[in-house]
Image (cartoon, rainbow, N blue to C red):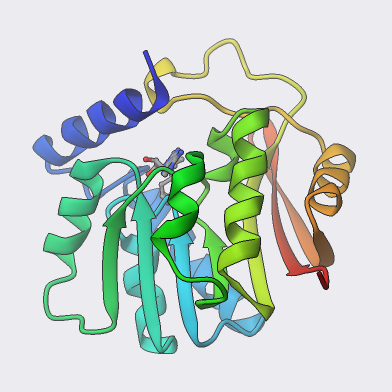
Length: 209
Ligand SMILES: C[S@@+](CC[C@H](N)C(=O)[O-])C[C@H]1O[C@@H](n2cnc3c(N)ncnc32)[C@H](O)[C@@H]1O
């Protein structure tokens, strides 16, 4: 099954089961902690979240940003995000596939001060990852920041649930060289241990053109 269908079906299932969103309550608590880190790392201005799902992180960031846009290729996730965010004036949600080259035209160049990866990049296989970086470079202000949130693993555990979609297996050295090959400078990063795998948060600046 293709990735878009897998995520779309998963969001339909979560929504009809009245779940709070992707990853349940744990993920919501995690995004509160992530918001604190983003603020400590200087989040400001016009923000884009890629792979925003039902918009949980976007809503948490909205009091601290001028404007927040969430993009996701699941139409159910985007409808759900809009429904949960009624009344929040500086929030906007759009459907779009970050791995599609036509998506680069979805936003004007240099529109965003910050782009936050909503755990989306690690759902993309190699060729699609290049388009992710191309789009981010195009949409970021030259003084802007890209924040990545990525699992680090050598290989997928045998019991990884298929309905959660593809996960890109990569280790730290390879990820650091991937970001620099794709035009980003590493400002700082933080690695955390989870049961069975590591997770990295990275702060990147676009290289001068
Ligand atoms: C692992 S989930 C994370 C959801 C949420 N941001 C979170 O952290 O709980 C990855 C998200 O990225 C979205 N996604 C995956 N591939 C995508 C693509 N090519 N274009 C846009 N969104 C994508 C999925 O629909 C899903 O919402």
